[in-house]
Length: 440
Image 1 (cartoon, rainbow, N blue to C red):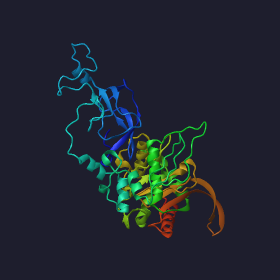
Image 2 (cartoon, helix red, strand yellow):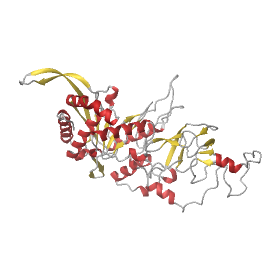
Image 3 (cartoon, helix red, strand yellow):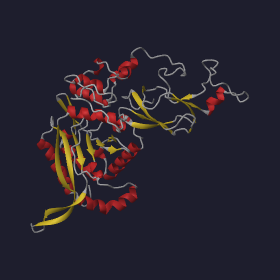
Image 4 (cartoon, rainbow, N blue to C red):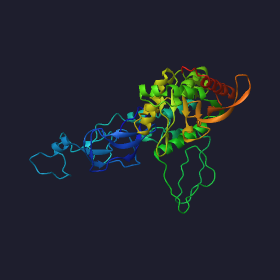
């Protein structure tokens, strides 16, 4: 199991892309994993034949655990001299120094099976446990900081005592969860610390019961926690994007020819958002107990829907320093790598403000949930042409066809007043509706 960032202590094998006996090329995707932060395809470290799978789909193991074994050409040659007949597969190596008969996909930190190679001398007692406990996920550390909890003093349920989100959520809960015992065969996930009243639903005849996928369970836990720690309020504005549409149409052909990037409305909106976050810093902030951290960096989380299901929010770092071209390249790159499972853990960390775009599916508006560790999220509704009453050249009212969309802003009322949120939205509306013809 590879190390996918310093805060990641374990991972789940979500799918094997090869089966035992398959030939595998070097750097060819071998299996998929899910961690606290990201789903990713893991490439093979060398070419060879997949001889054994040690960790099955759905199993969660610590980092550096051997998950499979490959037989490489070099290993096969070392195990079987050219002049000798094939040796029995179970024959032991003559000495500890002899070359192994198979290459491990990932070097182990502890023995995981009887067939595994002898473990290296162990680290000093407690060192790994202490490291993973104090280096819990960024989300857990943020939660702990907000509530003044010292993680090192807790005993977690994760690998080697690592404190998980469930552990901290249960610790912070005002009272223990009360969940009725379901009938036989019932299946429902209730995050720790979230009270469920009444009996759990049970499947009926013909129903299909599916366990939550790793990413669905992580999303479930994160959303439940987000609702619990922030005071949600949502404000809606209709914004006229006619000028943006005209500018985009005028520059689109040349822009796409020069950059090779598809030009959408999104980079125009991102640039306007960055401008207004500088003017309204409480929307680019985090809550830490009784303190408000006003972030100087503007890192925009861009929600990406995954096929067939799921959602991930990669982060465009220092977005305010990027040009329209840079914003376009950055968002397109993150979306492509999210859908192909090429994101690294750092790609989904340190967001300061989030933008979600359900409008691409036809939604007019919604009330998005504020991600933990931030104070606001902007939702973009469908962009469509509407008949609007506008003021004509002589001050008269007239009907016109305008390109419009509803924008929704969910904000944390603990630190942002409604007036402040509406000022941000009014300024964003003004910026987008008065874009100079030369663009941003």
